[in-house]
Image 1 (tube, rainbow, N blue to C red):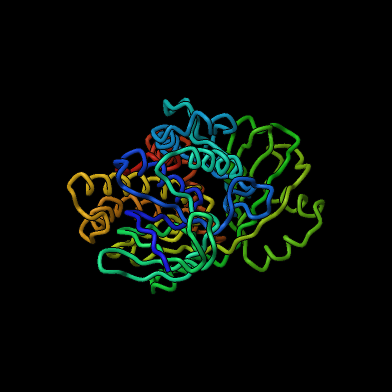
Image 2 (cartoon, rainbow, N blue to C red; image 1 turned 90 degrees about the horizontal axis):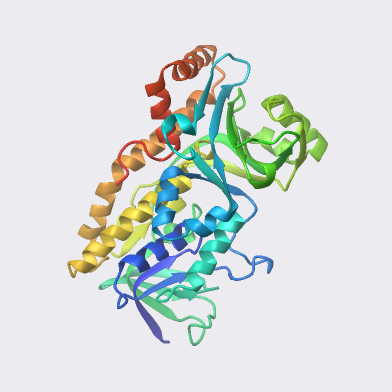
Length: 411
């Protein structure tokens, strides 16, 4: 059995793992060796084995995320198929509260951006394959992982062109686990999570309305749960519709005409008649937080570290801020001639990120719980809150900065 040795191994080639690889490669000296391990084959999204996070769904990117992608030299290419959010319309179904956010009022070109995951994946993969100093081990499954004397030892379970035969081992001073919220390896290592089940499921789909969205994102809160319609290129919208799980199961089975009728009844006619729905996906909604984000030789990143409710659109943006700080911490450790997997090095990453993570997760969780409750008392509170934000600019500015990923401490 042969062994391949790296300084850093990133497990997971999705949006978070690929972004970290670029960031590290830009900062670290060429002598530092790095590999990205991905279980799915990349290169052609039509092969049927394309990385699953790069599907036809869309992701909301904050202004802070745009700045990070700009630093990574990815934004110019991404922006070819990115739709800016110029306005956000927030309402509560059946009540008078409403607020509107406008990019021009906050001196930014956009409040956020919407990108199709398939396009983001294509840009990331092409950039990764064109970047020297990143070994792309794909498709390759990590079967087992355990601490070693000065890092982590990984056993693979399938053949890869970069390795001579099956069941090879990899060794790394530092492993970053970025393989999603259902990480099998996290469970194998006994990494526990704190879970809070919202009792909801999100239905995600692309919607074609009669009217053009005019670059407006709609956040609509209902007695069933919140929904969002985000502007996509070409005039379509990306729908995120949350509701009790049993109701979601019923609506997933509806024919297109009936599904659109129920959506229309909940959303209203701000975009005219809703004409078409694309493929529907559904996801149970659970707030997950890893109780350990670091161990000697190990960092947990992305959805494996924290999975948020999607309505506030903060999950990927929070993870990308984690990526930015982790890359800087590793870079500093290397310059100080320290092992990047040392626990005191990795704890400095946790210390820097703790406040932003807690603030963002708390903001997202409070918004969901306040606006997913049909209590008459809470309905009054939130509607006066929305009205207050509409009337008082500092409150609107604070809310806008949260939406743009610019609020709080984002070091």
